[in-house]
Image (tube, rainbow, N blue to C red; front, side, top):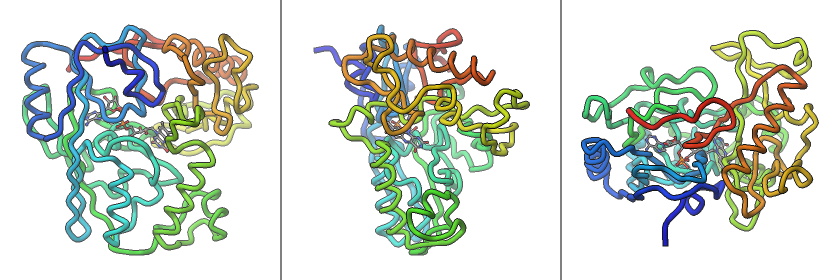
Length: 346
Ligand SMILES: Cc1cc2nc3c(=O)[nH]c(=O)nc-3n(C[C@H](O)[C@H](O)[C@H](O)COP(=O)(O)OP(=O)(O)OC[C@H]3O[C@@H](n4cnc5c(N)ncnc54)[C@H](O)[C@@H]3O)c2cc1C
């Protein structure tokens, strides 16, 4: 039976690749990528497919699944292989008496993908305690240690690695405080849940518990039985604008180094797309999550074309209402609801 991206991604859509290769050792990962590059075979690096949507025609090339798994904790230093499951790394740090990563509990996917879009949740970002990324540079054919300051973090969800096939993340290093106490809580809803004030701290274990509970309620923890989690999490990225159109003046605004950030969830909801929207639109196989308007979800049997048509419909409604054009937060390979599809190359 041919393997397809529908089986390997959390949105559960997408056709086959010419070849799927799962790699369990870091040295092997570098060799495999070098091998395909030498043969000029297009390469798609993937972790757990939780931020990836691939076209119905699939991918003409090799999809390399990073399945390395080592995690070394030495004092406050943590070095995790790219393939290590992110949430297992969070748990291991908490069990070792370290704090800092607990607000990022429950985020699906691999550790190597976390710097790609500088994953974040509940007011925390993975870059805060990251020290370096070790990556294979496909352009120069060398392994590099890239320090935090060269990782290109800054504007929302941006990094040196985002939509940049030049770098294959091999491992990620962190330096974490040795504390059983959380960082000051930055997210009002989380503080409320814990019955404390924004800026207060609680035990690291209590913070993880609250985050996992809140994520579970919003279907932001993977659960194969729950179609609200058949998604990529936030499908649309929060737009960062130089100038906010007058029509969007009532939207909450947050400062960003590149301009003003608007919450895409607010724009979607206020453009007339409530939670669960989509049952009566198109074939109904793609809908907004019933618990979170930013998540575009597969209700079963959807194709990538269905997802793209639905995403374009939401984007157009938001643009009509507020003059703001939404783009994807997830990575789209050989599919698009907007500009020409991105190509994969170095
Ligand atoms: C239910 C749900 C909840 C989510 N919640 C959040 C959240 O709270 N915050 C958040 O930020 N994200 C969230 N996400 C998105 C997703 O979990 C993260 O982006 C995650 O880091 C993706 O990891 P992955 O291994 O699945 O990456 P994949 O989907 O396999 O890949 C994503 C991108 O990273 C690239 N990539 C992957 N591994 C490597 C590597 N080793 N080297 C170079 N490039 C690589 C791929 O080429 C692709 O472009 C959520 C997703 C789901 C389904």
